[in-house]
Image 1 (cartoon, rainbow over the protein chains, first blue to last red):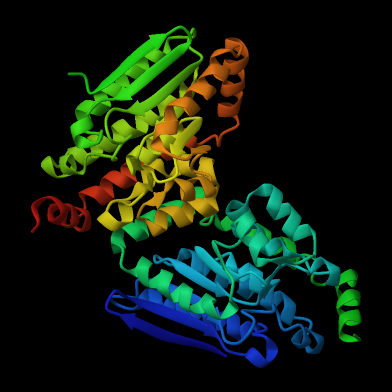
Image 2 (image 1 turned 30 degrees about the horizontal axis):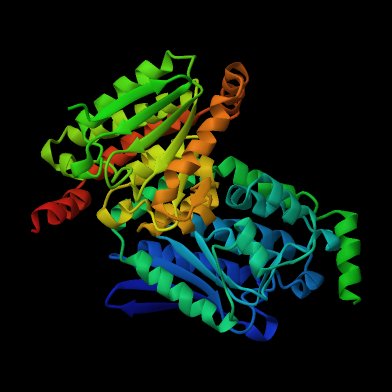
Length: 251
Length: 249
């Protein structure tokens, strides 16, 4: 359900990680998150590795978030999803190459949190982005460490507390997206184009710059990343969450 | 000839980068001259505002990259000097305006971002092309983050290249945009007029308080950034890339 491809042009080599579960709008399972992380680790470990990585999703929607139907069968799945999400976003952020996310259509909840691991986010005007999870008793706090420096305190507070979704234009305005295109079909090609350009830069300088930016904005702060994850995990066994999720499954 | 000059008139100071034949590229000598000017200005509490500008056809083309190659000690000397200069400029008692004619590149863009205001025109060339040249903008990153926020700063520094004044304004690098280079003087004059008329004590107190609200480890990070930039500039990738640029080999 996650594929790693290589996109090669004379200008540079790019790794492409694609979520491929489009019949479920790329809803995330713990294995898919683990696979994204494994792809990132694999790219990192390659000798003469690609110069940039694109994270995308097959179909109309980049990612609709966690596959909550799994949690119905096993109450331990939600904590596993949150933990894997945190690990995967960190792995993307800590890669020594730039990461470009292609978020056409939508990046919802866990899907939006994945974007926070990317350095660039391309989306389209009619896409829907955000964290509509407090309404089902889930806390998006896990996303805060990477989201807050990207969009600033005020926007972060609004996005994590208000379950409403925003469109691509608003995502661009607040800095959740770095580019917003008119057509969803143009998003992945543009991400590949940008990643190819980034792959043509001087590699050592780029890696040093990214590492330094990570240090400056708290992306390397393990204690804070763990704290954010724990804030989301702390309520996963509570009555409120169980009751609210049960009402989701009842429809 | 002084490579940087300071003139004052009433409550206004003008700090000019004066190496026009090299588009005001910051060599060690120019940086020394800037330090002397800023030291002088730091003792002047009768000045409300300092306009920083470049003589000739550019505000500042950045660090003198050629000097990076000339002596193995130069990367560290240049970058330490830039770090300490920006720290001093932020600590000045007066407000600072960068009036950017035509180009502010790399370290020149860093100098611009440490000022309180930056004015430029739509077709100016602005940006941080360090990663294209094998060097690393670590020393100026903390100032850029304060200007644009960490997310935009990440994209600007990783993407390299240069952008138009218009785009730089959209991203928050520029605080005031005018149409053409001919409009710069008037726009700067308008702002100077307002700041010169302000109460000097109120202006200084506000600026000092805003500085206090900056991250507590800002100065430490700027200094650490200089070490990182110098290390990268001394490395084989940067040295090879710069030799190609200057020697065509």
